[in-house]
Length: 400
Image 1 (cartoon, rainbow, N blue to C red):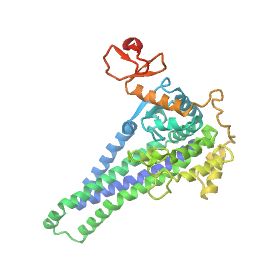
Image 2 (cartoon, one colour):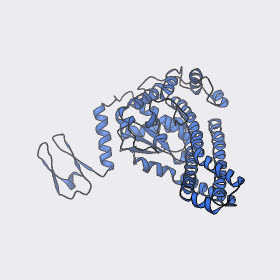
Image 3 (cartoon, one colour):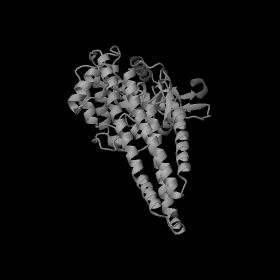
Image 4 (cartoon, one colour):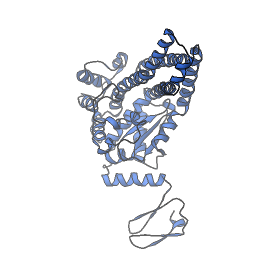
């Protein structure tokens, strides 16, 4: 496991170092273009800006992402099945601490993980995921997200996103400055060949810098998705669960709707490109490729995924030391985790998830003898409510 984490960490550190150097150089260029002999000040400002935003992301990035997605934390009694699955995958992945579990009021099936390290991790799933997927499929999705946590992907990706954002912010500031003050500057300064060259370089960076930073970040993200699929299949010992989940999520009609572009790359499947091909700006590899690799595995070990990946993509993915330590893992039969419990119907799952969302919104419930469940909104102050089905009157304080 440690070589796996170290390999990811080395690639991440190289990426982040390169982006930091680009950021500081950009600050110097832009400052020099705006004001002669100000390149040192520009570099310092760029560095300080990055440090502040990186620290904010490190300590509060998970809260920001969860709030942006509208996620609400749940406990075991709120949704025992989901909580048990997360607990199973916490044990299988070897995480030192149980991640916090969140649900998102979104009809589209999807999920993501966040947190700066395994001790401060969170997993969020949408209501649509719980409604549309069976237990094996939900377990595959959770295992994939646990792999991101265990492999320390999320911290580096979060900081990389911050760097991309800072670079884009600086570029946007410079271009706006040039647009608003360019004419005034040209009249007030004679310039020269050196100053003209610096100005051209600054403009070129302002246009191409954010694009290059995004390409580096996206390339890193695509590789991490394959690695998380490999680990997820090993944790569950059932690659078909994750493959089937990816297929269902990608084919869901609601995936075509755009709701939160900033959060899209964090999910197990980017809603903007559910079944699209992988381009330079793709945050995820093609879903068809991920499904094909999982379904061609002969077992559930990392070595089995490596063989399937090499056959499909023609190259290696998993570090050699990790492959040598990989032990054979057989594929378990479907439904083996809870064979004594039948899979709930789609209607039962939708009712359970819907009631949970009402509860998290502050609603109370009253069970009537006729079988109806009355929802009492938060702030209701009346002493009684009447059942619309059988006309029975219920005392609110006693019922709740």
